[in-house]
Image (cartoon, rainbow, N blue to C red; front, side, top):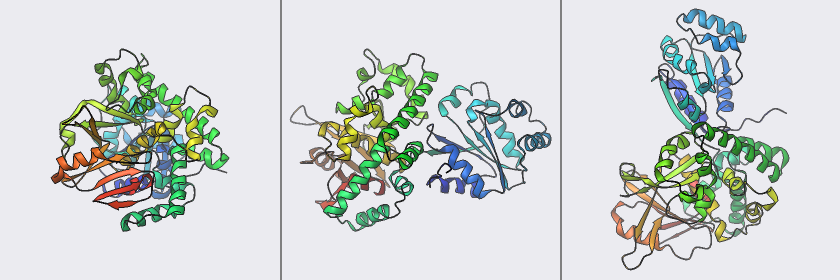
Length: 446
């Protein structure tokens, strides 16, 4: 049995590049390691082109790599490439894939001339941490169209496990503002909890489908975490970047209004982290929510770059990371989530899942805090998204919600800016007093 090819939404984005932009631009797919970039690109090439050549620079021969030392004579270059790979190229009907392009900077530099030549199409994939490191001495091509690839979202996860019904059901319920009802809601929550435990990394889902064993899935995810930390060591030999990543669950569980540096390493200064953050974000292993100083459609212009919260890009990885230094059997999140007995102090798993789903829908993440006029209490809106010229505040409640004072205060203060208001919780859907109380499984569809 071969490796499964999962249906991914990014396929349509790649197709749009082919139809509208490929004459002038190569495609560069950005994303974390093991997120499925190479798999989807090869599947696309197989279906959409008459022929393709895949150059994996992690395993390419010396002869292949030496071709890029001199691309002055492209006729001879393509002749050699076809000869070495045993694949015939057809003008305007073939694509050449540069996989792990960061490992051969000369290949990425050659994109400018290859695209201008116009005979074939080009797709690049790779780890952006290493790409950045390995491009100091080359000319970065402007002829690149960049798109982002994220872990499989909830709908893609459903497709992967053979469920073609659930997503359409949720969309219909949300559109009609109807609750699912007790039995259906319990089932939808059970499926979503399984998604949180496994996550959206294709390799983890493949392990689950093959073995139906969450301990085996956890082992797969631990291997992915190890790969990420190897990448972090490439940008930071002090180990601080890895410590920042490892401390994300601890910081979220503290319920603080920003990422707590001391959880990563005692004595860490904000300046040290600020230097590492761009590279960590470019690795697509973490998501960041900045504090919005002025919550409106221009939040990015007035964000507080020194005040932020960090989340792992994949909640399945988050669950493993939370207990990374313990044995699988000590990871109470698996048992608690499966049995629907997650205590309030483990609610940060939901706090990590919501931003992952918002990012997958193309949102940037912002949150907002404000002090009470009558006490030292701090009101906080977990996430704010923008739609048109309005904003949508989102408050996440992992347990049995009792009140949403922060949301009320925020909406009173910025009433003219508000479009839709959401309380995300684990209960069934409810529409009341202008607020959508939505179960967490509806977030991908709002």
